Amino acid sequence: MNAPAALFQRAPYAEDPTRSRGRKYHEAESKTRTPFARDRDRIIHCTAFRRLKEKTQVFVAHEGDHFRTRLTHSLEVAQVARSIAKALNLDDDLAETVALAHDLGHPPFGHAGEDELTAAMKDYGGFDHNVQTFRVATELERRYPTFDGLDLTWETLEGIVKHNGPVADKLAEPAFRYIRDYDAGSDLLLGTFASAEAQVAALADDIAYNNHDVDDGLQAGLFGIDDLLEIPLIGPAIKGVQRDYPGLEVRLLRLEAVRRMIGSMIDDVMVETRKRAAATGVDSADAVRALDRPLVAFSADMVEDLARLREFLHARMYRHYRVNRTRSQARRILAELFKLFMAEPDVLPTHWAEQAMPAQGAERARLVCDYVAGMTDRFAIEEHHKLFSLEIWR
Image (cartoon, rainbow, N blue to C red):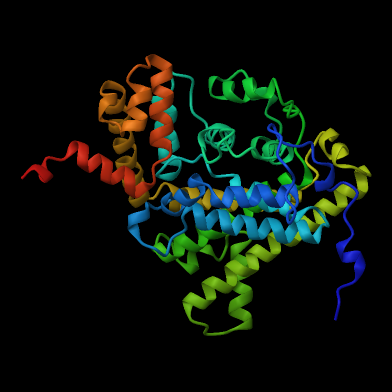
């Protein structure tokens, strides 16, 4: 049976790929894909995206293949974003594209890696993973003969830099100098919210990581099912599964409860977004940008429940001594690599050494930072072992 035609009617405030503001460099349009679908494909094929397979969120990649990596996380975010966008009659290609791109700039070792690079770059212009993602998309990826970066559409770049909200108030920060300089020629409207599709990607990120952190924490044994029974969102989901399937094995109980929590969060976004669209009367993509708050959002009750869930995860997972030990090791690895490459750039691979050796100060630091940020967990561990361990000399 064919779906009703109304299901495919574009919302008046959706982005229209036929009216895209275009790319920085002129290119002939694809004969088979919309501009946003083409952006998605470029992201999927880029080097930084492939490297996400061994960059982690909480657990380091060598700890086991059951835990999420940045790649599996990005795929989960993209799936949720596409589903929500399609249900809201938005451009699901754009929502998926922003979702796939949102973690391209993350360094190895999750938040520990970002913390260490932020500290290392304090006197050299700073570090921010969202800015690094933007730099990957506009400069660091080199795959085409006539331009650097991926030459993504204006709408995708806007979504990458603003999916979490306006960034005009951050432009004074050293880490955002690249955004400030780039925007001088592109006008990404940094003081407004991004498109509804980019906002969907941001909420999909929240949905994915809160759920998979619960899932990973249970698998790692950092807490148990009973510890979650009084925690908002996941507690009611667990109790519902126990009621519907008495005696269900723990693994299936965990998976079904997480599935239900994802569903409840998606339902909440759908209801709240439709309510805000009706209340504001938005009738164009630019009207979404002109609002003084996000169009796509969780309800106030969901925001409160998520805050309590995150409090639990911070106490029982993110600050667990096993995770703290991993974070400590990760920070020492990156600190020592950064310091060595700054002092002895000739030990960098040839391509990087040729650029870093004549550079000084902040210029060299940025090159070293780019090299280190691009590493996977495993590669960083191996590089550190090669450069600091004498075992291989025996």
